[in-house]
Amino acid sequence: MFHSPSLARLTMPCARASFERAGSPDVRRWLEDLSELPNFRTLPTSAAIAALSARLPGGFHNDPADRLATAINRAVPPVTRDRRIRAYAHADTIWQ
Image (cartoon, rainbow, N blue to C red; front, top):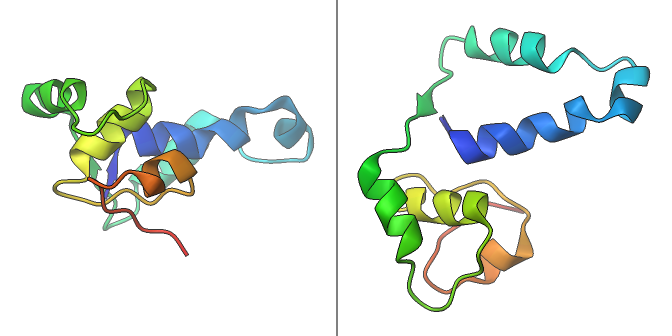
């Protein structure tokens, strides 16, 4: 399962020109292929999640995608290497 901020972040390396020259797949095609996998699911961002992202406790930083990812993690912890999210005391994350 992916929520939209995480899915968008996964596409960023594919969209960079240097990756395109190196033969990476077209981003749109890559997402289409990914969405055809049998267990692939995306989670919508509800009004409740959007509202929660605006009220995160503990002085969380202002990056909207990070705020959404952190609000959504109440149901599904995000997979992230972002140190600001991992350091936030009110969030669980997955990263090794």
